[in-house]
Image 1 (cartoon, one colour):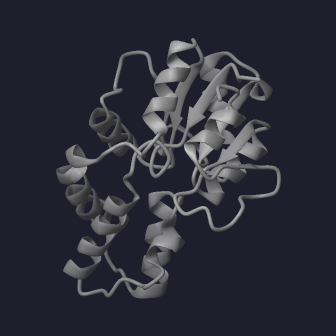
Image 2 (cartoon, rainbow, N blue to C red; image 1 turned 90 degrees about the vertical axis):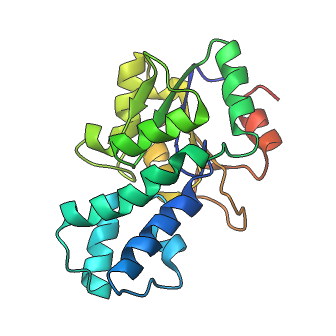
Length: 212
């Protein structure tokens, strides 16, 4: 059955931005003389900016204050955000749900300026769209607060909502919020958290959303 609302994670789920996030991290680290770890992508996927900063500070000697560090990273990201493309198959699903009258929103662990830059790159930045950034909540994913806030903004019960995610932290947040959670990773080699619906293609996503 098609849910009343679908809340999309942004980075890696709705837009193919994870490579640019990693690129921005690498550029900023190398400019400071720090060699990025080989498993950087796996360690930061779905994690908010401040916990990533803490990891880099504690393990790799990053000695800038957070405010100075994030400006360096975001400068590269925002300069290159206009070239970002949607994840294959995602916008088609988004548009079909919109045509069916399903409420949709974006729930991201990224900061507001990144969320808005990504929405502009996708061409879906419109007035009244429900979006929740890391700046809008006390606790980010995997805490359920971001998705519960989205449901509150939509005026719906969590049980009537579905979550689209590509990461474990995001999927855990959706499950903890009591929502149908579709785990659609970029590289579907492993299943998501227990209770998540594992999708390996846009067709599988459509089936889980009841529009297949």
